[in-house]
Length: 176
Image (cartoon, rainbow, N blue to C red; front, side, top):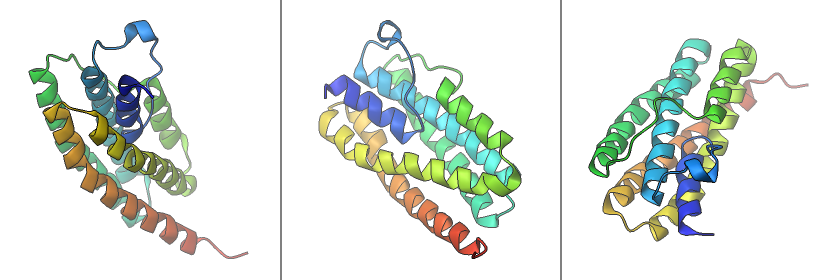
């Protein structure tokens, strides 16, 4: 898989979804591509976290939402600083797939929200964990490597928290 595609895939999967942009609209460098995807993912995670805080009736899910929103605000500050250094222009909003997921969260019934939130977030963090190693192997830019390296422990911790939340939700389901 070419470097550009792998780095882009990591950024997008790690932070929610692959942008559906035509090749001609893609940034000029893999670093720019990664930063754009990371920023959009951070915006999406902040939105998802806020929705979870408002919508979930489960204190564990509300706590995860608050945690995700706060962490991704912090990570986005790092992404923005690197973007400024590398003269990368960042978009103002998440990509269309990320926006669609946020709409699914908003449309879900309170009873269905928690499971939807946990399963979609867990799938994204599982992909991010697998792809983080690839990004570290192929990126030579120190600022990009710093972002990925600093994100790796949070990816692992969020994955573990989501797995525990999934197990908690399963245990709360009435037995048939």
